[in-house]
Length: 83
Picture 1 (spheres, helix red, strand yellow):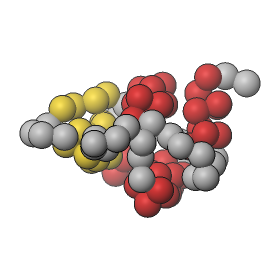
Picture 2 (cartoon, rainbow, N blue to C red):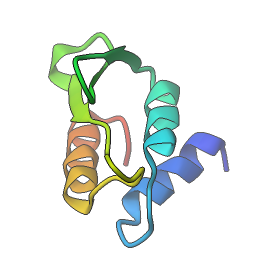
Picture 3 (cartoon, rainbow, N blue to C red):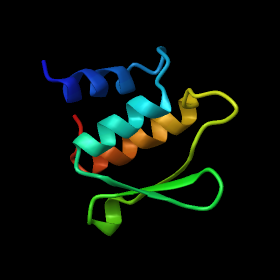
Picture 4 (cartoon, helix red, strand yellow):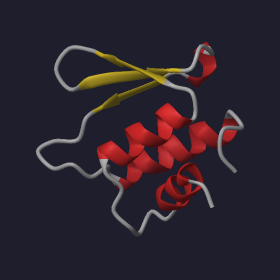
């Protein structure tokens, strides 16, 4: 199992914690490029406007909220990037 597959499995298991660094690593492996915005805003772009992800870095902690993970999972699945 590749590192990317392991990160995908961790993302899909919403009962376990998933950190910003893990999300960033997964998205970079899926071909996204990170663009820093103002404050904690970050965009991830893979060249397809339909797959653009716009997020806030979690703070004060480092773990993604469950609702954010569910939205990410739905977006990545609809784009065919994860199963």
